[in-house]
Structures are given as C-alpha cells and as structure tokens.
Length: 245
Image 1 (tube, rainbow, N blue to C red):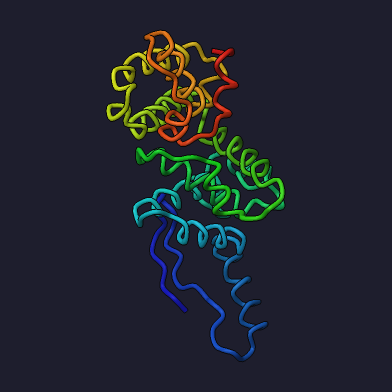
Image 2 (cartoon, rainbow, N blue to C red; image 1 turned 180 degrees about the vertical axis):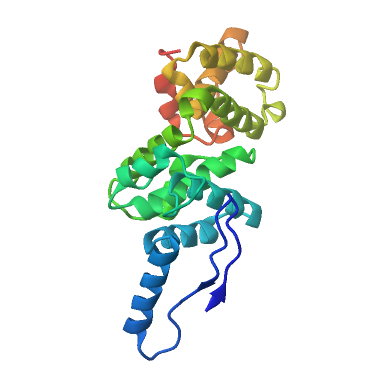
C-alpha cells in the first residue's frame, strides 16, 4: 500500500492506495485495487494509463505537472469537488473513444506546452502518444475540441491562439534569414486575422508561413519556400493558404 496526499486541485486526502504486488494472487489483488479505487473516488484504470503516458512523454517534470493538472480538469475523478459540469457530463476522452486514453494524453501535453510558451505542434504529440494508430489525428482532434469546450474555449480562444502564434513566430527566428525585417509585419497581419475571428486563426503555423511568403513578395524579397518550411516547421502545404489570405 502506498500513501497518497491531497490532489493538486483541491481534492480530498485519499489515504493509502492498494496496488497489485508480487507474483501470488494477482487476480485477487487487482480486484481489491479496483474496489479500493471505486470506494475512494480515485482515478479509473484508464485515466491512470493516460497519466502514465503523460509522465513518459513529457519534455520536463514541469511540463508533466502542468499536463497532469489539465488532465484532472478535462477528465475529473469521481467525486472531485472542483470538477465542472462540462467535464462531468462529457469528459475529454469520450469523443475519442476507443482511443480516449492516448488522445487525452496528447491533448494535455500539447496544451500544457503551449501554456508554458513552447512551440508545440499537436500532430507530433498525437504521433508520440498513438504511434501506428489508424485515424489517430481524427481521435486527437475530437478530444482537443472537447477539451477546449471544457476550458471555455469560446472565451479564451483568441488569447490562446495568439500565444501559440507568438511562440511559433519566435521559434522561426527570422532575424537570421533574408526575412529578418518581416517579423513585425507578419505579426501585425496575424493580429488582424485573430481580431476578426476568422477560421484562419485556428491554423497559426501554416498561416504564419503563408504570411511570411506574402510579406516577402510585397517587399520584393526572393521567395525561398524550403527556407520558410524549415523555419516554420511545416511542409509545402502552407501554400494552400496563400489565396485564402
């Protein structure tokens, strides 16, 4: 048995936790552990698996802590006093069933990285958490959409996207390239898109890459698509946004 302290978001002290140990009577121990979790309102086995993925894939211990906090918000334990009605009625994992466990981990790792100011790409977390899973992106985006609803995305979407876009543009480090004088213009254009609420704000990486090419063309600077791709960590697919913008 292992002692447990209070949760990071106001959960009650849960005392000891039964875990299967040793080689004998494994089935009995697992049954007792299941009863123990149910009685204390602790995390389900599935959520515990999602926690394990987060701890394994997180870039740093701090990243893991923030991601685990987000998991508690989007996937509250039974009886959690701080859980919102949105999360209780339809937790983040449900729209991604039967891949709710790794999808939830990918979403929390991505959103926590953004919150910490990292240049995070959701598709990369999906691949890390669901390698070789068919339609993994579809499961991931369903889960991400639900989590944003739980977090009140309608109120925080713009600031969240602006924060992500700022991290991407900073990481691109255009000052070292022929596009060194375009960063301010690109950012001003981004803010106009963000303020308008246009769907483009939901796709900051390809949009910023496209804005870079547009700004370069306007200033008479040669277009180096391979350089733009490398700096914004994207494929040539960003060109699909040129006409839209």
